[in-house]
Length: 332
Image (cartoon, rainbow, N blue to C red; front, side, top):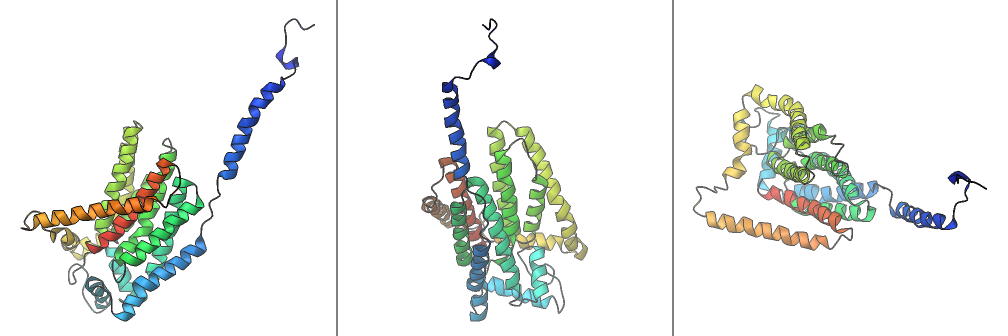
């Protein structure tokens, strides 16, 4: 007879094992339903090629290039003759964008850089969508929406925004890692560096994108009471931005065109004349209707996704960002 009743000698009741079985079954079911990340590399290549054919090659040979884009192609050719951008030629896009125009001499070879940008943008967008949903099918749906918008809204122009998208989406792909693990706030220096590269392609669009990203992360930090992390992340992002901004931007200071570059890049905003325009009410009405249209577009695309409510909202916002920043090419 065991007086002290050593538990290790006692047989385990059968009912205790029956409680562990449902837990093991639930874990096994969760592992089985979680889909592995399969990059649709072939689909990205095919869709990128189709978008370049529709939005770059066909307008170029059919003479449907927008006047602004024709001017950019001319600048790429003219810089081989004489002169510099921002001083001798008017330009509203970033320095790296005109550098690529210079490399291709304003020819159809510029489509190669557009194709590479679309491939990179598709890769980083898929990774961002998969990190949010962990579903291959829904992530591929986001890719389809992206390429449809890119082919429609960049038809005959707006190529600077397309070239900036890989860097913008790379910054976006780093954010879900922090949202999933707030204690591991790494990668913000890389976010700042990628935004700096995007800035030298499409300055105004990148600035707007950076503000949206900043307010989204700040709202998350306030909700998690991690405001101190937000301060660190802000300075880390600023450090990453400065590492690339100052060396590349020094070219404009060396050429004495820094002031011209700022004024010309801000010209799309100045041309709106919000303060001195007598038709200010018309402008407010127009951009108000644009905001309403984007909201309707949000509701339309929300039906594409069947994930959990929170992830569905976040993923829908990704689609809205795509439509908004691609539509900015009509104004910026």
